[in-house]
Image (cartoon, rainbow, N blue to C red; front, side):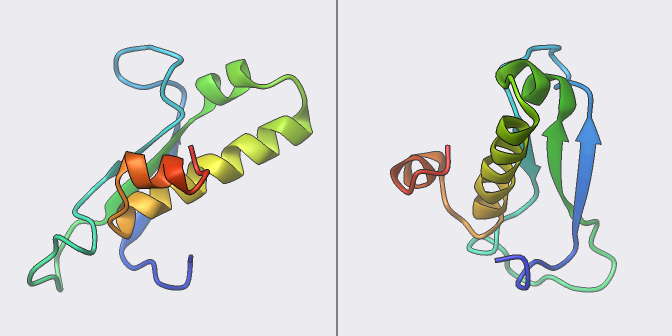
Length: 93
């Protein structure tokens, strides 16, 4: 899954802009199914993980690792063109 990623920046931030603890991650960019001409000079897509919502959602370090894994797979899924419904169906939500 990671081998196919191109021009993607992984970023961590404390919280989403609205300050909520509901959003664990966010994909910003144009997924592969929607891209036309893509080449030199394009800004990278971004996958953002939010630190404080992850910490609020778990009780143990092992739970945190698992939640980060699920969030990363979910956001990378958006890069490949999967919508939230499909990711939920596949168990990555």
